[in-house]
Image 1 (spheres, one colour):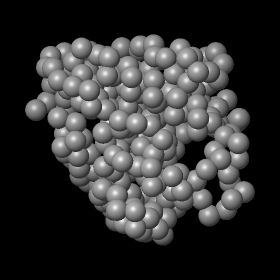
Image 2 (spheres, one colour; image 1 turned 180 degrees about the vertical axis):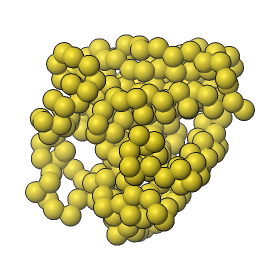
Image 3 (spheres, rainbow, N blue to C red; image 1 turned 90 degrees about the vertical axis):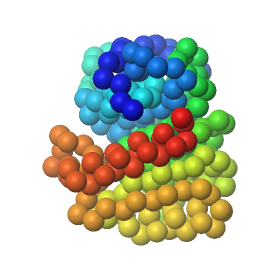
Image 4 (cartoon, one colour; image 1 turned 30 degrees about the horizontal axis):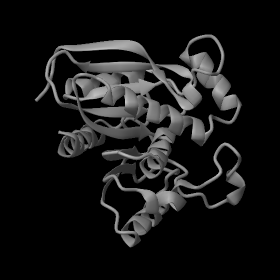
Length: 248
């Protein structure tokens, strides 16, 4: 079922350490007992593509929220904040997880909510999705869209902001996981995806991976050269079916 009428707004949520952040919140204008999705934006930030993806989720019957993870990075618009965040080496994992938890709480408090919430992310947001699925309670489903650096081969890449490789927390994952990957991607490369799958199998986790030939990083993003229409359409179909399976 699709919901052609929806409401969308920029709302305030209580994030890490109680900081008040801003998030784009979209929801159907009708219906009740709906599942929620926290959409974690990619490294470029709180951009038009992620806002549109949030509305797509609402169109298909979910309460969807996309927090601006860079709201603490000074004045100006989302592009200015994202540039500052990248210059500072990104934001800390603890801060992101605190903000995601705050958005999960926000969704569960809505009158249309059925209490179920998934986490989904693109690129760095895919990595953050993995962390959230391992570190937060009551994640009902997780969707990792080409999350890079889940596996960390060079320990020198770890730092105080990102102290642990997400793959090392996999034993704590309880949510079913959907992963989408392009076989032309460099991070995660096909080897990374293979090794990630080996860990999931060894630990007996519930997961489904889909890999796409002819697609690289960010193949959902219509505004980028790497956009691949056929693969993106199939990937979205799989995402929506997975979310309905676990949130309805």
